Length: 596
Ligand SMILES: Nc1ncnc2c1ncn2[C@@H]1O[C@H](COP(=O)(O)OP(=O)(O)OP(=O)(O)O)[C@@H](O)[C@H]1O
Ligand SMILES: [Mg+2]
Image (cartoon, rainbow, N blue to C red; front, side):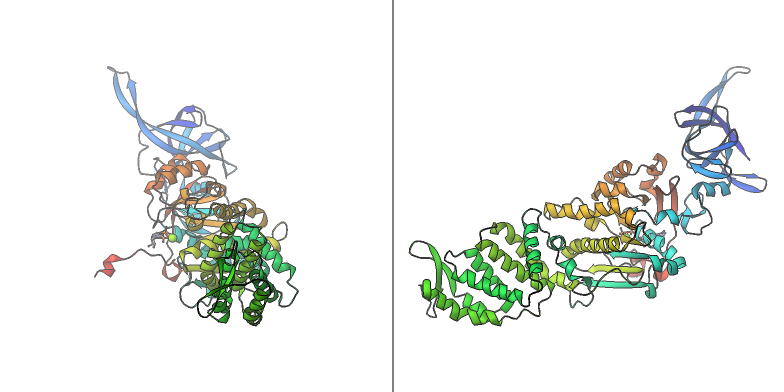
């Protein structure tokens, strides 16, 4: 053992060490073994009785000392500030400050093999994703304690998050996929199509769904009808407000369920709706408008539409009432029997001819929503202007959503252990909505299937999580935003009990809801320079120490601070770069090659 100094002060948990004269060598040799010299972020061992207290050096400075000899002269002594991080007992490292050294205790260098055991409690499991940045030691991570937690990977763009994320999962997949495929499912939400190739796992174990809103769609995210026809799901899809639009959706769903067993209940419902509106003694302009809209959706420029265009609401003798325009362009007021006959002649057959057997889920929703609002308006039970925006959103989003979601097929948890859902070719709007639905789908499917204690696990991995978890974007309806965050907060808070774990990677942790960031168990923090992000780390991550924290703004590419409940002490890790086809599809542009 090489002694490097003595303890001279213990104030709180801050320990001052007076270093020996020769202690500032870069490397020391003893018994043929190399020891690294003492400097900042190195470990030293303080012998305290039969225990060894391990301290991390946090600073060094020079102190002046007067010596008396021939005349008073002063010289400098090197002093170190250190903080205890744990202790060795019976050769095993325990973290935490349970013992403190006392003045006079000798301080020793820590041999390399002991440094390793400081970092890995259960050594030799062979799950390694990189090397310690400073010590350059390969380090194994305790995977048994890591993959059953929520993981956060943060860092500025280009700092190596995607590489770390992929490396983290590639390593166990490479070695244990047989076992994993029996018990665990991994769902990767891939906003940029970085994992659709041969990354993560071979195609035998991996299902890739490429969702597209541009061009012809051929891959879908499948929802069971019971899942689609659910006010919560529809509320997510169309961003319904909590107080008025959600109940409206609920009425649609319950109406559909009530008559689910009756054949052509919907077409009969449509027929009676037409009759009700057109025969009404107290005509409503809004109902008529929606009726025209419905006709256009069902009959698209057919006879029904053109006949309906002949109907208008005009001021009669004293009240607004339906008028009908004739071929010559003159409006006629009709009432009583004349009105009955006109409706009979002009609409009955046409309405009966409507064919709704071919409607997909979204078409059916659109039709049901129109009918529902007409009914609600006629009965005077809703404010048209509160519901109308929802119908407009259904119209606007229907096409995009029906390209990425298919209703009807059986869909449970996936066959393959690894599922990658690429949203690269979807529109921004869909990128925001769909991930929530996907998360809800898998969370609920897993919750349903799992026993207690869980014997299977599901892992939801979201790269670029700020896309969906930001608290910042004020564009969407407030209450919808809440639901989105609420769902993820629930997953983060409750998921562990059911064996459902989330891994988030993001450039802007400060944009993500603080509840979510602070409930993550383990963090891989790459370079971050923004003050707000750094401040968030201070508040959210209790296991981050000040030395590691101070290095975050200057970390090199691929290096990260690893900290959290699974790790005894924070460590600085240089993550190994994945190469070839395992590398996420996110490489930097090589201008030297491009511009030559
Ligand atoms: N450990 C590493 N060692 C060396 N280079 C790396 C390492 N990790 C990533 N890189 C390189 O850095 C670049 C960016 O990496 P990556 O895509 O993982 O960053 P990112 O943090 O996910 O960025 P973004 O936020 O833009 O998605 C790539 O060219 C990658 O090859
Ligand atoms: Mg990335």
